[in-house]
Image (cartoon, rainbow, N blue to C red; front, side):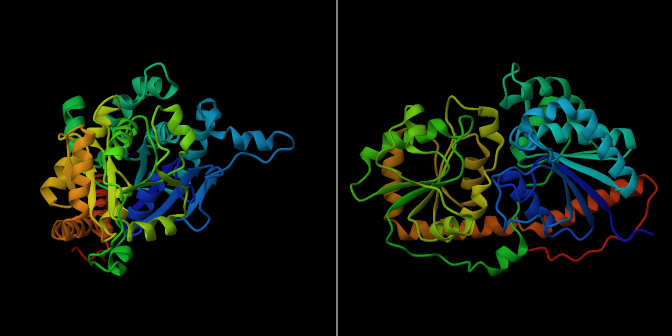
Length: 405
């Protein structure tokens, strides 16, 4: 008799690769007590050696061949589209030998996602889709990813045993698009991180507005343009800092004046320390000219660190976005939903000078963080897998080693 459900994770993006999806997967499965194994793609050069997967992972690395080995690694992601049959064959072999109860994969890392679905279908194993971001809505139909969305999205999402969504707004999106009833499996924070975080307000005299994360044309580029327009209107002692891989030259190409901004690239530990000391944590989403379906449905990975920083969050986002709706309902951030640089400047100044408001927002942020405790959703996932496996005729005792908060 099996003691717990077996999950085979198949994802192009897992630790030590740096990014939202690897962080999300590590956080969720850090509290999963069932059997886990994983298949991942070549992590590339943008890795954090200290950021390790929380489950056994096999990497499909390019072969180290003389002369061409370097190019195979450098252009790994570009040629994945040409080797789907090879990937599917390797995945099928692993599925048949390890015999998982569920194959779990996520979008939008589409090559491994598409291949994982086909391999699971060949083996008759239930397939779980976890939508980290939207797919079809985020890409031109003329692009490779857009073409694959037209070919595969409806089939994979409607034929998945479970569709797992990141936000309630994303659930509504797929209910309306495909009439799918989905499960909520959101961004989570590991129990050990919450338990060691002193849930206190960090008072500071710092007057900086800090943005951390990726600059994205789809998600936040035009909101950062508004921030640039708001900067001259801010009080003389206010500062803007960005911890991102984009540089001043990149912003100039985007037509954004960033010369007064302090832009840095820092390690995760350094960023987290900075977030505990900074005046305001800035969470922007595009009001226009972006991927508005994605903006409406998304929850940004950086907010997980913002929520436990002890400093107030300023959400600058459309009023129908999950960010704005959740922040208002939960009281975990000050929300500005007007696409107005003058309003952004004045509200930022008000927040910097209102300690009571800051403390209330930090209290709300800690409540939101606790609601995202990893063990809560790892337990939910385990129950879903156990239920689906039992329907196949399997039976086992589900180990319950969780502490719901």
